[in-house]
Image 1 (cartoon, rainbow over the protein chains, first blue to last red):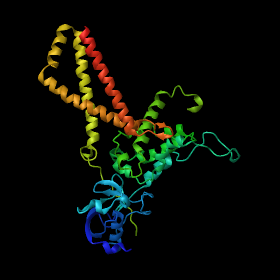
Image 2: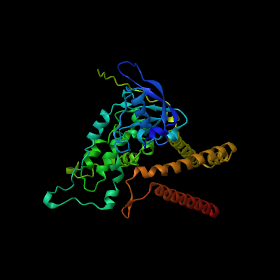
Image 3: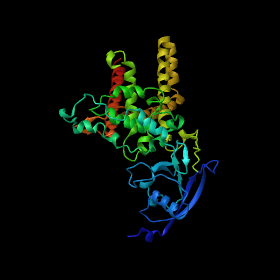
Length: 253
Length: 134
């Protein structure tokens, strides 16, 4: 079943290109791409790379909205290129840019180093509440306890939420929605006892308090993680922690 | 061969006036309407403390056509603020788990709005009854 057979229509793609060795700043380039109704934006980019311009750079891997590699601005909205379909965008020309709010490395590839550092900074692992040996058996959890953090465990680190966040745009040091979703995945886990150290790491200006509850991060999330909920419920916790810190026993501080 | 020269694109300064952020901007500005209405009520209290003449003048100003128009606009803005406030509220609390499942945020918003409406109507009823009795 060759889908080349049914690529009878053509769509125009305007792609923001940036080649650091030759371009002073990013410039748009236009490509005409033959397409079929089952083609995603990612497939259009692959088609350009294969047949028109081999130098076009973009990240991708799984092609099915699991790996989180192919996030980019499509007609101004942060989206995964693999689950955005040309049939929904045609017949108008499609504008494709690298993710907003991130430094552009080359063409549609952005710098992710700061994001990875943020993820590492929030203790992204279970800190056992009660230490157990293997002989003691597994840490058990009810479906209800799992439901408390399950959506946050669905994050694929695609960074669309960061591209949608104007506060991250204004302050690149803001911990941001994605890392906070991961933080809440562990903080909300009934087996975890690391809440206080994570709270201490996000209670300042660059932590949760840069957020003004714009909420678009949750709307653009392709996995319904609801990072806005992760950030804002930790604002409440951070505020309680600030005002009730004198009541805490010394050992827990 | 591979020259690294990351390019930083600036966020547009007018992001708050652009889609999809306009709804957020309107929500935040409706908070100003709440403050303005609070200031009008506070002015009434100050006039009441100053004596009957001051309060009579305050009532006269509040009953003017311009004031009624302002109140109508403020009312719309405050209602919008209430609706959007309760839409944001579920984001600020941990997930509510009932019978092993998270309660949908839209249901929390709806329940809160109904509660706020009932409280408002009850308060209005108390004001009307007390007003009629005095």
